[in-house]
Length: 499
Ligand code: CO6
Image (cartoon, rainbow, N blue to C red):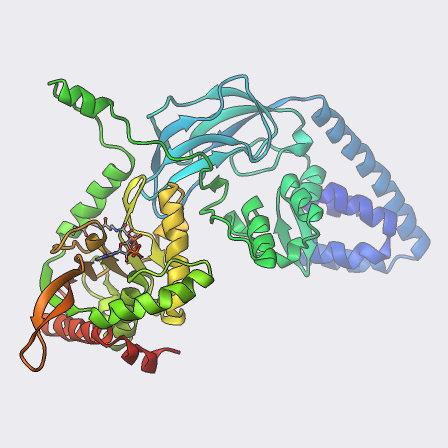
């Protein structure tokens, strides 16, 4: 039995010690979790032993492992470990970020989930939070340095190794500590969470088994618990993109004036491109490889203007702001159902088209951090009011500089309402891997002829479409545009298609 436990690499200390204490009751559990086929055969032989013999062997084994466990714990307790806290993979192929601000300095004491620094990736500005309790002993970067994913960000001297949560980038802890602190066995699945997260769940009477983890390998994060709680209570919380990264709480700072002031003072200023500007270079260079076709159209929105005026009070009753955008977005989704080629992507070798099932409509947004394109996901499943709700949420996050990667990724088609700033016409640029985008101009009150030839006041908006001409032809774009225009000129007709 001892040999079996030593051979088995997983959680041997705890499992065998328990096995020794409870004998046959845990044999099945132990076997299921730890044993190879060969070991199982040996165990079958062991089970054939008379019970007193088995008990004696288990007691011996238990004593050995209790001693081993004490030794491991003893050495852990008196040992301060320095953990290299690495910048984790934040997905979306992001390999580097700019360190915007440190919230700690060397010598500062931090607890789990304390903010360490704010970084800006290609996609979003995010706050890195600590996984450990301890003292910061080293910062690897200065403000405005480029930090690399997978490389150390800070060193933290932890106070107790038994509290350290293991990731691929930190020091080893005894198997028992890991077993007790990071895993919980539920229906054969292991739920992973840090002690702080477990505490938070416990304090709120939440069973971890009911929470879906959004961290690496399904790890349950603090945000998952908060979101779970929010769903139960109806509160709205900002989302968190990945793992140890969550959206920042500090208010966004206005862009530094230094460069523009120096320019005003008559000096040329050269500075490196960073963050979103750098991301824009990348995405626009990619967009440049797409042959764009353009199509412009005028839309007469007088009926929509009247309808929105009527419905916005009702929306306000739901605590929502109802602008024109939810109608534009929903109408686009209805048209995408009819023209799936506009909600598609072309692979890099131009061999395959993927028609996307979800209508994740990107909305170009003028945020406190610059132009970002968060997406309203699965518009095909949403009512106009639900689109408004989602847009309101995204706008609030955008204004606070808190849009996360999850909201900024996955777009399948985009709309840019430049008219809300005042632009009348635009030439929108496709955001790869999408294949089409529409830019909406300012709604203007202009004279038009009615059917009797009389001049009337009309609410006119220009829409400018760009499409990937490699897979979309002008006729398709025009038919899509006509359909979209008709829905908005006669918004009641959308009712027939709403589910
Ligand atoms: N015309 C007239 N009035 C408008 C329009 C247009 N096109 N759009 C919005 N509005 C009104 C809107 O109805 C609100 O009025 P009230 O409800 O009466 O208060 C008001 O303007 C403010 O609307 P808001 O901007 O808050 O909300 P909306 O849902 O319309 O737009 C948004 C949300 C996120 C699209 C917008 O806030 C925004 O950020 N727009 C800028 C987008 C941008 O920067 N695009 C440029 C990208 S680069 O495309 C590009 C090709 C180049 C030019």
